[in-house]
Image (cartoon, rainbow, N blue to C red; front, side, top):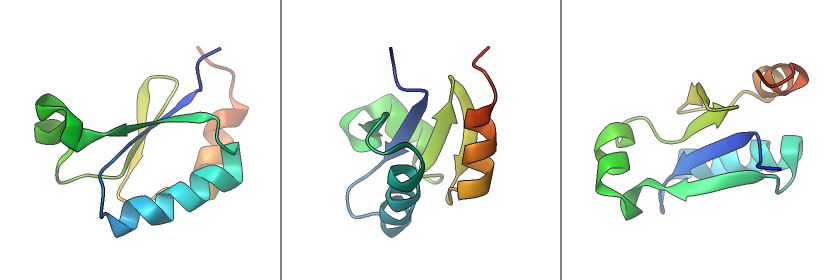
Length: 79
């Protein structure tokens, strides 16, 4: 089964490092991380918003990841 969380990040991003700590606390390593700089379209789309998290294919947070909001979103069944 695919992880429910997708995490868009980039190297050298301190907010991404902080978000990664929250993600690992909430879901362990059960998330997909995508480096936006590896894809021109993603870089253009998310360059000023990283980190960006998606839950079940829908944008959930950007810049900061709230542990409480993430837990609440994951408690809901996927649609």
